[in-house]
Length: 380
Image 1 (cartoon, rainbow, N blue to C red):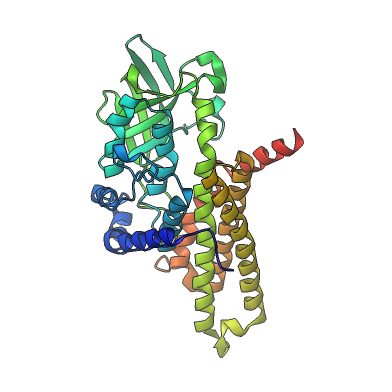
Image 2 (cartoon, rainbow, N blue to C red):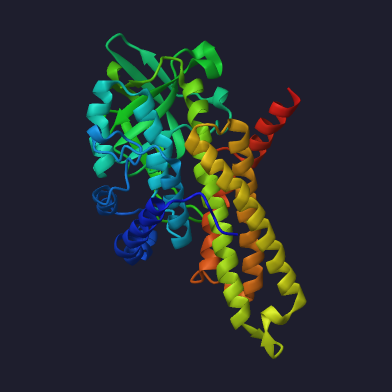
């Protein structure tokens, strides 16, 4: 079906993204995977190309465009290229809204120009060794010392953890407050007592640096509180819908791309003296995946438009996230099977998509958490 949510301006932006990927990302991606981290030059190149801070006001060096469809284009093209390691979506769509929506004028002047140029790479530190989706389990503390916060604790599975110059840390500022006693504290590179652990060895997304972070009596200036004291829970809930939409957009784009390359493969690959596509089972597999993708695409595109209009709620964002990512997981498994032994070879895109995409049903809120959010809304 012909998609109808994008204008000529969006498609022109899509060409810009494709050119950027061809010139600045794909020639280097294999080396980044070996290194376990992307180069800072790639971030600077993204800044020069105007791919960072799409929604940041122009006065701070951003694009000044809050239309989420541009972020959707970015997510779709990076997914199709198989290059999740350069985490522009995390930077733009997850951390950006915290800085622009909660930052004071002084904080915006201090942080946003570098955010848009690629000189300041960002991360958000929420997950801990004993606390993932359960915010009440967070143990990292930020103690009010009058003229500064004293931060202690540790975080894990932090994307951009090695490269990050600016880390938004979720910490307890009122220990007895549970999830309602959390605040967002911004820690900058070079702060005394702030240490990075190892670059974690994952099964996929090898070029995306994912790290442990440690905070040992880190003195953080009082002016680095982002948003309201004890307001992190509300702040996080407000911005999670966009995070989940970004993951959902990547999910359906990945499933569609897997279907596309696998359809081509079964037409060319021969077995028993004829192309695989002549076998009824193969045709049924392709037919089922094509139908699932078409139905999911219709829903996701509606959610993209609603989010761009500011009308998408948390429940429908959760529906989009769990459905699209579970479809991506199924498609990766089925397509790899259709490739046979070649699908198990790391050099084939289907194998890389299988391992890179497996995290999609986990980060940003697991499938189980998404179902809980939806179920509570229906049965409250």
